[in-house]
Amino acid sequence: MKNLTVIHHPLIQRDITFLRDERTPNYQFRQTLSRIAGMMAFQVTKDFSVTEFSVETPLEKTEGYKLKENIIIVPVLRAGLGMVEGFLDVLPEAQVGHVGLYRNEETLQPVDYYSKFPKKLAKSLVILIDPMLATGGSATAALTFLKNKGAKNIRVVCLVAAPEGVKVVARHHPDVPIFCAVVDRELNEKGYILPGLGDAGDRIFGTEP
Ligand code: PRP
Ligand code: URA
Image: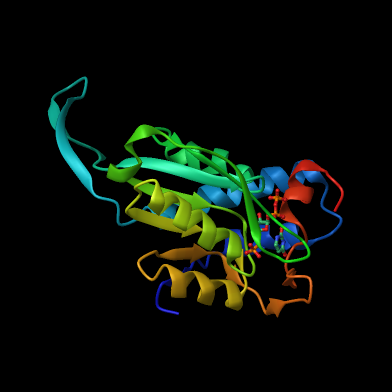
């Protein structure tokens, strides 16, 4: 899977274990997901280009750096919202767009219900975030959506990926790099990732399946 980067880090492995644990309460699930997102952001941004400019320290002039690209973070509603703060902690200059999709639990097909993006989508580096990449239907639809709106330079960041989902996204969007923290074993008959962490949206927001 050449488009895929799995971000291995002991702190992320520890935190994913906490998310997997069914006893983890909603508020700790949210905090932990946000912390992992911030840690992943370091790896996802590691090849970003910078522009050099001068800055005056209290003592003398020296070189400084700022990010070259405009960055737009796009969470897939709802569960992607759980990763926004973590990304913004390390990318405070980023803008945020939203795409609302839910999976029809019978057909497993994504249904879109909302979208709103900053203007400079076509000229920005777009980071699509969603904790779960299961069948890949939602990510594939969100990427098509973003491309139809003009986005050209997109990366996908998820926490837990199923092998099936990675293959589907890579087949439909071979130009898009995918980052995840772990690739799990498989999907069950209802399209849930095994071992996974359950329904991410429900665990973030405390709703019932
Ligand atoms: C979850 C998850 C992804 C999608 C992944 O959202 O956050 O968006 O499922 O599944 P897929 O790869 O098979 O498409 P869900 O549909 O549960 O909506 P929610 O975030 O509103 O709970
Ligand atoms: N969406 C989730 O939230 N969890 C899964 O395991 C699959 C899709």
